[in-house]
Length: 361
Image (cartoon, rainbow, N blue to C red; front, top):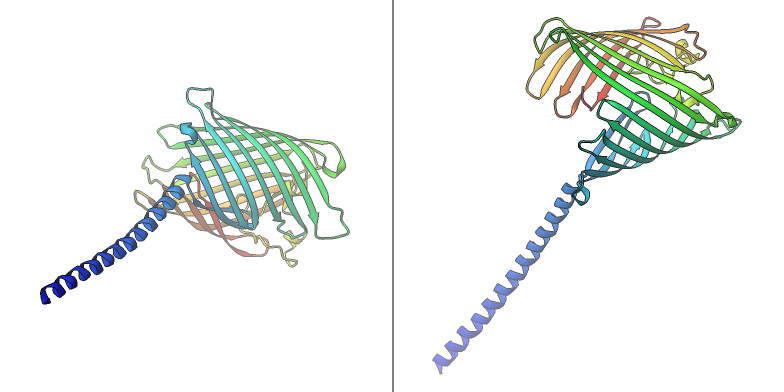
């Protein structure tokens, strides 16, 4: 009888152990399924190219968000990008790129976006819908056509809001030339555009020429040589009736440094609106001294002097000057940034600039 009882106990104990093992296996399977699902999500994110987005308007400031990039769609050399950004500029966009080999043109880009932003003076809000087609050719020549619908809402209720439709054709060409054993290097970018719009409820057309020339002179043939960089920038518009949001601010990080971005009533040069123009001429000289360099990181000391003039009627009289010192930090993988401390000769205003450049330097 005892033997039978012992056998029954052993059998029951075996059942309990088996049930416990099955329960543990079920728990392990649940964990495994969760891990598999998590890996699938991570792989999907990795394949889709989820990434943070960061941009900086030289007058308004920073915007940030995220985007998705889908590469090699149907094993074809093409990609789709979608994204959203908020901050100083709110922007939604959808972009399609197709790349070609052994063709006259190498890239076709189509983009649709909706953006909204306030002016630096907070006197209007601009909402813009844009559809753009961009063709990049093999010979550094590019063609772009933009179709825009702009809604301009003024904060002053006594001023009527405007709806502006615009068609713009752009021709872009760039050239880089190295001269005399790499002591000299010259970069030239030329943009010509023809815009047709109904600004102020009238049929308008405007020709724009935008020329940017950067000439670099190295003091020696060493890769980390000190150098002078001279920049000349010209923006000319044929029409005096261009939308207010297309005027150029001359007191910006890309033009004359050393001026506050925010407007102040006690700063006469700004309060008299002497910094926003249809046409701009800029001359800038900068001395760049390498401080430290590795395979990835590079630090440089920069000394600069800027001189700019502006006009709305091709009579250039209003001038701005600025000078200062700064540090340039570059990363060979992501680009770089300049941090400048600028002064101007008008009232000694001191302004700290953070100049973002996340593309190729």
